[in-house]
Length: 280
Image 1 (cartoon, one colour):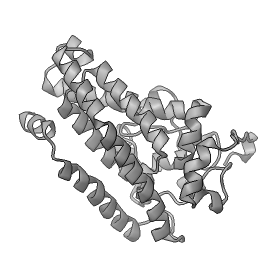
Image 2 (image 1 turned 120 degrees about the vertical axis):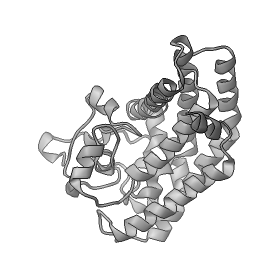
Image 3 (image 1 turned 30 degrees about the horizontal axis):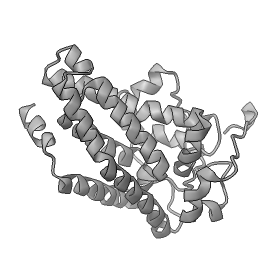
């Protein structure tokens, strides 16, 4: 534990950058060799659009990073937050801390983005991807990146997270999103085994189905237990899925970066309700 704490307490920015770039490159190669859905689209144009939003996400997080550092220093100095009140040692701090930060900083804000129209307007951009792959992981409108950052900060206060725990969580979250959005084909037994605790691509693909109610399920980021606890977990044959968003199926809307940036400020289209037999 001392080695983990020491490394993540002063994790170099270059290492985090390599994790982002290296992860994208690694999973893109795997997707090319073992795709679940056949790659029948202009992958370079698709990747370019998603990398633009990845860069805006990185920029927002970089500009606001001082708030996370200041929050962590404050809770540590003032012994504020759950792990301080429970007086936990390093290993329980790691386990409980990552679990709770995943719940507050990822699952909860994601759930709220689907329930609150103002938040949904910004989250739409993530769901408009008609060809979900590992590059979709950080396809977030800058406004959504701010919302998610705010909930990460909230998690720091409630958990009482030291800086090393924040970097452990963010590293795990980065890898998890690249994995769960990947267009990878792999054995079902592996999915069943891993899926008891962690979110898998087969789980998260359901969330990207273009119609409700499936787009309102499987919100998980790292851990699958939150969807199981809050009964938002479903299993669907991935081969039947169609990616995108039924209110924004026009490629002229969803392949134009300027229009995508403007979507939250355009006339709100709401949700489309379907009869039970039409849902999938």
